Length: 254
Image 1 (cartoon, helix red, strand yellow):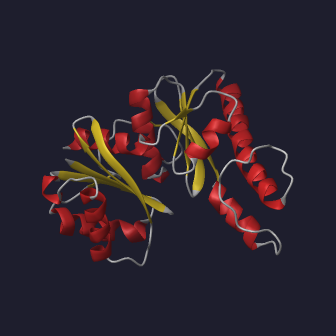
Image 2 (cartoon, rainbow, N blue to C red; image 1 turned 45 degrees about the horizontal axis):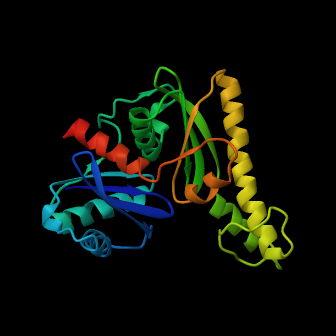
């Protein structure tokens, strides 16, 4: 089994794969104050709760957008599994043609998403990753990564709204029965959820107009499962896109 870890600003995705099969996936909170021992315990728990033993781990691969946590988790993998993880970054083969101003600035999570997207879905392709930030990656008909967009993530926007207003309560992201809310909480839910769905559709329309082509649209990330069903156009939900990309990059390098 190969251990795969993606470190995001809010969550860390921990998964395992063997061959082309994803064995499990878990999501835990990113904590910059955690030690390598604490993360080692988290990894151990995630693996063993799916009835796998750490001794089965033959290798590991990581991507990270949180530099302060990267080495801590890398040491945790070594401590818990006894293997040195491959960390996605400069010098690691990924097979992706990146046509932006400075390819080194492209986040490793976007690289991993794009590698998996190109391998599995028709191009041109738009990948929407809904996490702390919502990112749009655009791959053209020749499988080149040509750019994208970055906007505020849904949870971050909600936290900002609630924290800067005195009378708006915190609320969960479950879908209200109607678009038109009749109480404060339902108004908040409807406004946040449907505005994000409409934003996704609108941005995709503008990208397609600029490209002059219809695109395959794939959504991933912790919040994608909430928003994708609310969209009127076809958007493919793929919760395992990052793990698939990590799996492909691991096999390209090991």
